[in-house]
Image 1 (cartoon, one colour):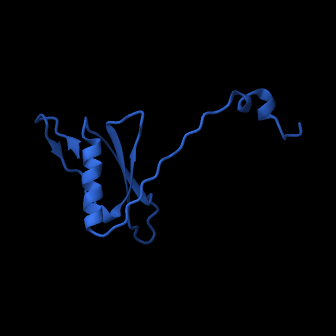
Image 2 (image 1 turned 90 degrees about the vertical axis):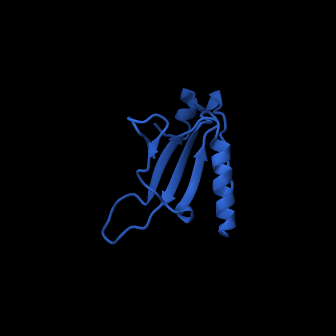
Image 3 (image 1 turned 180 degrees about the vertical axis):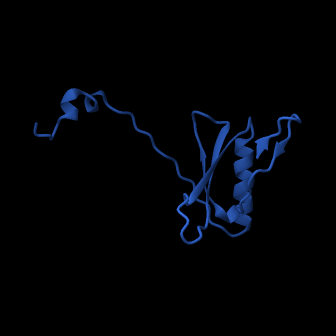
Length: 107
């Protein structure tokens, strides 16, 4: 969906996918109002387009409600849902010094 420029608080449907084709939903801790939906799509023979389509949506104060509604509907259709969290680790200063960059390299 994209916002309609002529009518306030209205969006136009630009593409649609089924819930079973939804492969992943990404939500960032840094941007809680932003969701990225990743859909898989079937490709016809000879087509070299990306196998996944990504749609980024920004919605204020309703990302959790939106995700919970999608999860409830997926589960009611008998589909498995798994939650995964990307663990970010901090980079140590010793990992970015000039000595660590050339470690193991014979110059």
